[in-house]
Amino acid sequence: MNLNQAVRKLRLTTGDTQQSFAQRLGLSMRAIANYEKDRVPNGPALYRLAKLARQVDQPHLAQIFSSALSEEFHEAVEPMTTEEKAWSDAVIALLRNRNKDLTDWSQVGRSIVSALERLVEGKSGEDVEDLAAVLLEARYTLINSAERELNNLTKARQAKTGDYYKAYSEVLMQNPELYKQYLEERAEAARGTPIEKSMASSSRKSGKSK
Image (cartoon, rainbow, N blue to C red; front, side, top):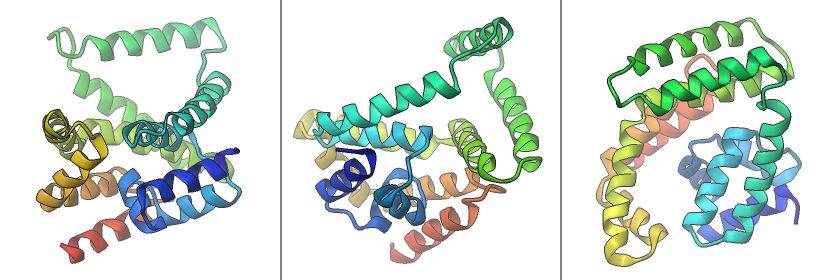
């Protein structure tokens, strides 16, 4: 099974349309359509697909996405020089110790996001979409309060239901405003990137449906 088939199989497993599947993952419907057809999902998308596959008890699909993600990270993210290794280790050390009052991680994060924004603005062609995806995820990690709350509520309910996907669905049904906030935060993180319009559209549609 290739990646395109795995994306489609996962969507069918959840019972989602391409639009609702895109909203669940915080992606555009166009991206999902392309991933099911012939395009290879990028790193952030692979991470979310693998996470969802585990949540809906599809370990085989999760392995497919995780393997592809590992391969991409090895090729694109693995430090290639001594300088890259030193800086990547430094950033990881700061991130992992962000709750120990040693650094103001939010300030560090904003500086990184600002640099990424300038990088995306200066790029064009095929590279810009991959960089935009990195920028979206970096921005989102600074503001993802709704997703953290959704995950906390889901874990609490899962302790009773034993089924993460069922618990997550029930939490979404009972907290429509929180889900709307999640989509709005994703849309805000996509601001100024090639996927801004599609993310904003998903947020508006969710607002109308609630």
